[in-house]
Image (cartoon, rainbow, N blue to C red; front, side, top):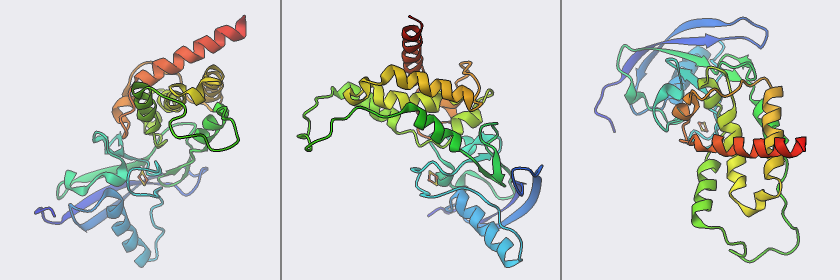
Length: 255
Ligand code: FES
């Protein structure tokens, strides 16, 4: 338990009724907030008060509240998830703020993530990118023996590092070009290091990166804001791997 006393905060929150509404900031007071509460619990307190007054609560995305599902997606004081290293909004604690602070809260800002309501954006474009990646070739039949397909530890670790992407979209929100390169590359990388992902490796990169263009995500210009904003510390090397596969696939297509 923190020894810090409870805080009163001023929130500037983006409110937007629907996709078509222009939206704008509304000021709220968050009173008696414990430093041990999470950022989402602080919003719960504000919403309880709004509901008690008969007002529309602030809509925001969340599910696991454990840094796993990737649903929480707030732009806090100008940074995705608040800008604390390796931290999702649901894992951000109010002890990082002080009594009297003013906090600005916005939804992700990117054309392929249209605002649905208040702080909730439509991230189905990410689902379509994953769909574009297609399947992996796995032989059906009886369950294979454990470890029947040996995978060097180094390769398994590289795949697991990439697989820790939770698809929250912070990389897109942080990028000045709204590029989805880090997200797409993590999904490509997690399969390319495994034998099961090898057969469709090049096609997967070509399809996913082509789809990203169609969805309206911008091109990567190597700002690496994505890497800095990623709450799961996905490294930039996954993007080099995805480019390599994409270039190989493009070259083969032109032959
Ligand atoms: S609510 Fe699941 S990662 Fe934040």
